[in-house]
Length: 177
Image 1 (spheres, helix red, strand yellow):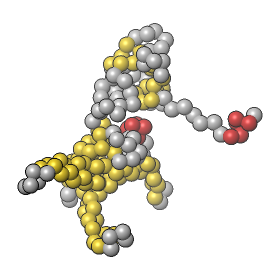
Image 2 (cartoon, rainbow, N blue to C red):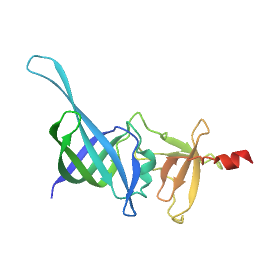
Image 3 (tube, rainbow, N blue to C red):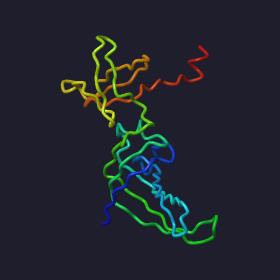
């Protein structure tokens, strides 16, 4: 068994896929090494890794957007394939993730301070999008709302996890009524 750890940026938004009735998350993670060659020229080499994560119900999915830096731990698999573009054999790395963490950064979708709109109480939000709001007595499906200084709304779930509020898209039928 090959175990692997990777820190990199998502090349595109993660997607939920299904196969034989099982749902999973797929994403591509890039890591760029920068170095100076023997001639003194700056060089960059980017490596892409395909990642699958079997936890399609993960609350992290809302944050797995292009450019977000993540940490991945899992089982590595080397795949060899024939490139139609170059007409040569190539190798790629795939990881079946057992753990994914957000590393934060400038592309964060959730501010570090949010307020309860009902009483104005301030809550701190960590880089992993978890607030210090006490949800220990909540039922699993219970949801709350926090707001930022610009009155943008964020969804709060059991465990203190915070996500940008999802606004349901109305179908054409409901818009025509």
